[in-house]
Length: 112
Length: 113
Image 1: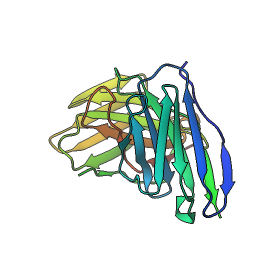
Image 2: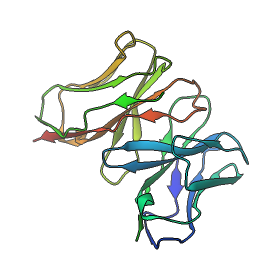
Image 3: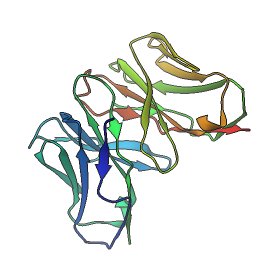
Image 4: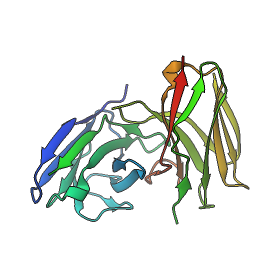
């Protein structure tokens, strides 16, 4: 089974802190994605990566950056956390030959 | 333009009923259509996908795509309490998963025992 793991299920940070969200997949997938999920807004794509050291902006990249130094790991970085970044963050991966995206369990981030 | 409309519900039906979930979209470039199921406190998991127009059946689930109307549906027959979840439609214009998906907001479905 494909497994996508995220470093934390719940995280509480203060405004202005730098926040790292880590995602690891164990199936050698080419593509990895970061989404945020908010009530009434659904899932929105923040960034994605189709190869090591490659990244592409999604629909809402402002306030975020990403890093992919190894194929299995995709990190989302909040340079200076703000309260409007309180959300559920979901990581996903895709092997590149199918349409299915495999999701991790999510990290619920609260910024106070 | 990326826009997908989906009624958030909640949609509450008795066990055994046929459930119909729908999404409309505006981007005619979308060709790949998926339905994800998300249980509470879990990540979404793929339920079904279809390419272009037509029907696809898998057990109690049937997915329909009408590209001329820009309308997709998911039918659940003989609904069970374990089907209670949020159902998300998702779409892509680019094949092979190289692009992010565009999701609907999700419909919260409740199957009453």
